[in-house]
Image (cartoon, rainbow, N blue to C red; front, top):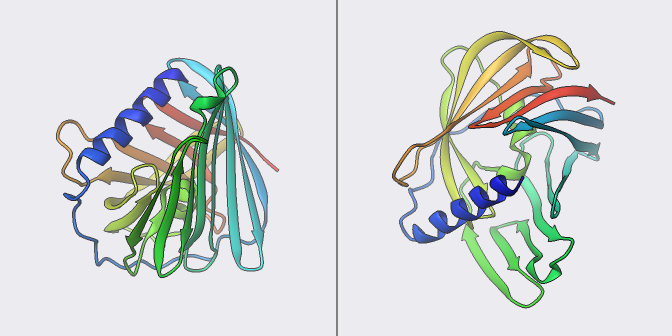
Length: 241
């Protein structure tokens, strides 16, 4: 897990270096499917550097809103990511992210984000806080909920759109290219499923390799996330409650 957080810090640093050079918002629109009908707890085998850990996502559906939360224990502490969004439009309401360190609490950091007419963010440690406000496009998704919201997009052969993604770590909204990749059979610890494969690719200006993320969703009315790959990190569905 140390390696993951080194990459996270590097990604944030790069994003801050390019503040002011961000690409413009995409005007692409998207339609959604009504998949958020029940609350569930999803458990995944998370694999990185051949180390496998359980990752548990709580997805709560209530009064037209969906809340997601994941807590990941690592050897130095805990990582938390959470979000709330509208079940029908997928537009986010709020997001949260934090790292806590067991032996060095002065290193603890958190980010709170609230969506309205603008995106308002407060980030930092107990000793130092910073705020940032961003203009919002008409259509956008929040990065903390992507594992679930991408599955709710209405996709078919030929689907390819540049979708605005709010990344609160970087304090920016950046278009990513989302494209339908066809149907594949995926084996997971929870079973074998016919899945829709989706590719997500960063299309911004940062130089160097641009890893592509892949997600596989059940090809049915539920669109459960079954598998995810991003460089050397993989999630594979092991249980649904």
